[in-house]
Image (cartoon, rainbow over all chains, first blue to last red; front, top):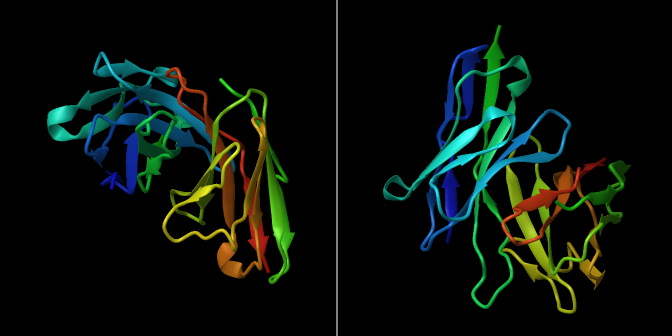
Length: 117
Length: 114
């Protein structure tokens, strides 16, 4: 069964500082990997996704993530955070079903990002 | 990407009653997914709803408690039956358009059972 681990429950970063959120996955084949952000009282917004190809993917809001197969990781990075980045961040893994059709996603427990002024 | 309308956005319900949540998509999609997000927790997949067939439930979720309908390619409902306070959660529907678009989520239904 697939699983996702986000080892950091909370991370505090100063505004303007760089950010890296960790995500490790367990899956038997090449996974589809996602990062979502959820602001308080809001729905989930897709930041970026990896399906195949270039292992460094660019997303919205200045975020990027790097897929490292050897480490089973898909860490999210941002060079300079803004106060508006404070939110809950979820890493998720999915896959295509054999014979076609999509699988549902398995989510990590999330990382709560706090931005210090 | 798809636009998903989910209704109701929130509700407060009495224990023992049932609530049906609607999910409408502006595109035809084969698979629709229902998730639960318990307070302060991550999302857990409840079931996958494929048009024209019975929904597939994940471990720990059963059809009697969470019956799902999928009458066409743009609409699905999830019913939370015989509710208890433990069912208080945010329920979200999601679709995958395929083609590398990723999964889109509805804004969720915040359910409180009293």
